[in-house]
Image (cartoon, rainbow, N blue to C red; front, top):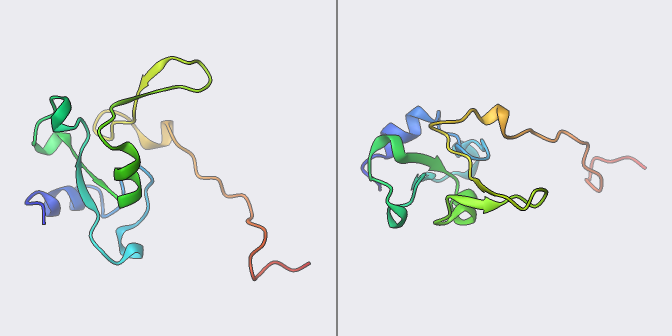
Amino acid sequence: MNPFYNLVADRAIHRCEYCHAPELVFNFPFEVEHIVPTCRGGANVEINLALACRSCNLRKGTRISEIDPESNAEVRLFNPREQQWEEHFQVNRTYATGTKYERG
């Protein structure tokens, strides 16, 4: 296990810092990931570490930026140490159809 796990997980309140999924639901520890990957000059220090679920960590990979599909401009990916989650993401609470609870 990553030696920074306890520090990073406690700071994140055991939630993925990208999608906010609770670690408890997955029944295994989330990953400590580098916000700026070491291959891109990021350091292995507390401020550059985030707690990430496997899905978010794989999706982000070693990228630090992406092309915005609306503007075609290169934009930096979300940084949980510098930006507020609520300003970048929203939870879609639309009712899901096709569930066993749906009455037709």
